[in-house]
Image (cartoon, rainbow, N blue to C red):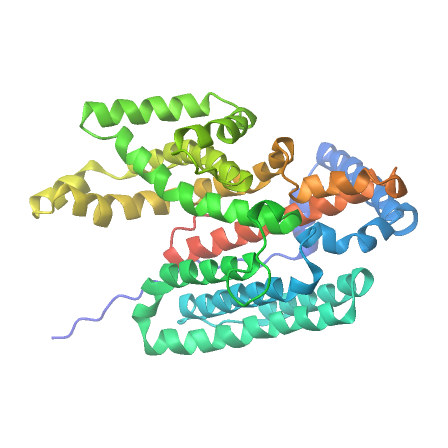
Length: 406
């Protein structure tokens, strides 16, 4: 007697033509038709107006003349090779990580190849307008390095699957090496003070360090708020509610003034480090609430089952509860990271010349009076690119972990 394994077949997919879709969703009745026509007219008016300003009225010379200042600020020109070397290291780590995480799927499909070609063409066009040919060659070399090491990482991931568990440590080591290169602590040459960094370089540094440090701090606060120890629970609640009730500007000023006072005499951290402390303390409170929402979504039965199997509270939390909680709140956590990245624009208020502060310094030059729209549009584009990249990475992570919902 044989039994056949049932084969589960998904529901049939129905193909619909573009005209049928448009008739169903845009022109199904007179009201939808009217709203569609009005929306198209408004959208066309906005697109035409923006296109006219971008291609015929805007004076982009202010961006071309100050392109290096926007990116690295007043970093020594003779030491720019350190920045390129750090960028190459980060791109190499990104390529290897991409390959290891995608070891069981195809790296580049038709869509990926098309996007890669569009990105390469955009790099060539933009840099040809704004900078020298050497930067174009280096940027294209970075793209090639990313793709080549992605394929290398995929082969390594297939041969040694446990390599994925070592990626966080690899990124930590890579970031420390890149930081040491930028500061001039390795590689020879004159060291660069942390407070002398500016432009996009300072924005990325403060955002990355604050994100990395605030995440475990926020997780500990979320666990502390659910602790059965009254002292730990109430201290966590007091910190979270106090910080969430204060504006970020207040915390940044407090960090600039109070951090030196709580440290031993003779230890006076640089202003950038104090700003990172303020950003970290602020972000950790919001991350704690995001993680707490994920902890509440884990069924209590799983916790009780883990206890029945003999797991102690530490193993129960780290192996059963926390992985499920973090997977459930990936979008909100990444949303907080994006918000923190944009909040770095407030560093200009405490005297640090990050990306927005560099734009304001450029506009203070009498030569560029009246170029506000061009400068702020360029700064906004940089912020959008970075935030959209974080959003795409979040979606990829959700897909890898199988938590994407439609």
